[in-house]
Image: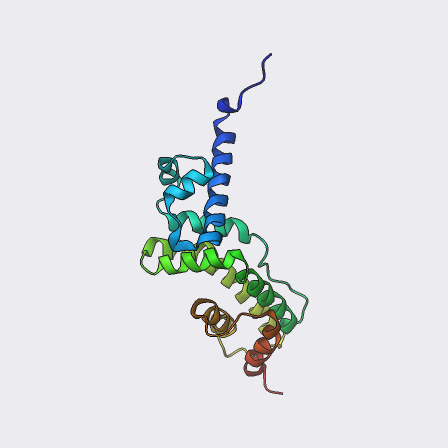
Length: 197
């Protein structure tokens, strides 16, 4: 019996095309910058037709968002060693390292485009920002219950206090993002969040 050709396996062909497209938008953006990348260039690099891209994604921003969601995976999982300072330092250091990589170039482009695209902004919040914020809030709530942190500050506010400096530097370029600065930053925030002695 003759082997089934690849053309007779549309699911496999579609997954290969999807993967090639996600890789293309990521790689092109890292090399050229987000604004310089067109859907036509992505289609050519991926070896797919432009209509195929628009059938799967409504915009370049939606495609780039899926590419970063696909790559972030478990990289930003939140550790739980029982020491909230150590866990925050570990997690924020991993974030800073990721933002300093090609991932940061693509992510910055998606954030910029989301400012003028409400659908993309909502998708960014729903798929990247909020799930990770909730995991952090859960870890902080556990630290509150264990007496490591004050109970009178909402954990969502704690998240904003901890991560706002990272995103301020990442998006505005006021200072370099450096993993070496993370322990001091975490300690400065936690100094105001720990219960009184």
